[in-house]
Image (cartoon, rainbow, N blue to C red; front, top):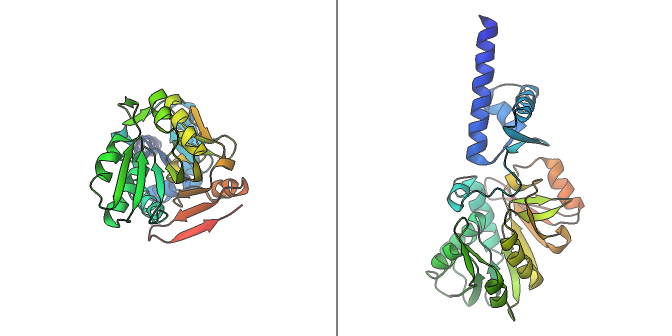
Length: 273
């Protein structure tokens, strides 16, 4: 009887781990151990068992949702993941937009939080370029901001405008800072997203920006998606939250990337390689 109860508890815990992964996109071993009141070793065994079944992907310090490398959640699916972390990241990124600047804000749910932070703290005389239909609509409501929309083919899954027309629209425009989201940031493979078309547009933005700022929550660190936007050497700053394993943050810093890590209280820690 005791053995059966233990097996049922294990299966229940593993189902809940999968549910949490679907909700958040990534989980950490130490957090799961605390949430389920079990040892980190027990959680590591759970994650290994789930990975063997092909239900999750085990990564250092935790696990991420098992998806094909080109799989792409919808904009609204991503908007429900790590909401508070994205808000803090977006608020910090918005502080880097100063009066008189011309900036580019790419599509995505984390970059949307930059837009929302600007609505709370408007900056005068700023030109904001974007290829995101969702962002343009909210930017248009902010006083003191001139909004330029990069046209092109509208991708329904992300509301991003991409393709030859988008690249053509970027011709002749340069930016003080470009703010880009991503699905993966890896010390070895750089900044990646699922869509080849979006990566092509974002890479063109990188070439036209004095400074490139990547904004991602911890679930994207160590992940590799289908299409590369940039190598880490092309990125000036990464803003994230402290949910990632410390050695992953150290590896990114060792690769030469400057990081700002935003804690729950809004406090920030800078890391340099």
